[in-house]
Image 1: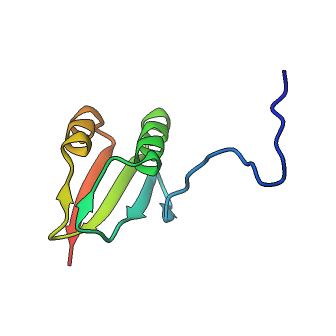
Image 2: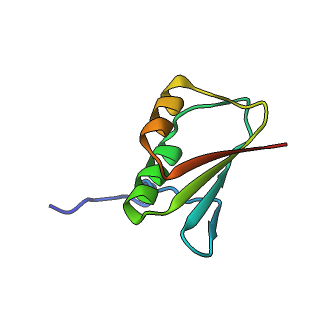
Amino acid sequence: MEDQYTRWQTRRRSLPDQKKSGNGWILGKSCLTLHLTYQIYNLAEEAEQQKAILRLIIPQKCKLSPELTDFLKEHKYVKVIRRD
C-alpha cells in the first residue's frame, strides 16, 4: 500500500542546524525552558544509530524539562553545551 500525499502533506523530518565535518551535529536552541521535542527526539535517535554526537547548544539560564533530563540520561550520544 502506497502513502498518498496531497501537495500540502509531507513526511515529517528534522535536520540539525549544522553538520560538522566528522561525526557530529549541532542543534542550537534559544529558550528559557527546553522540552523534549520531536526534533530533539528524532535527531538523538538518528545520532545513536549513526554513532554520531548531537550537541545541543543552549543559553546558560535555560532549564531542562524533567522528560528531557531523563531522555538525556539514556542517550549517551547527546551532549548539552551551555553558552552565553
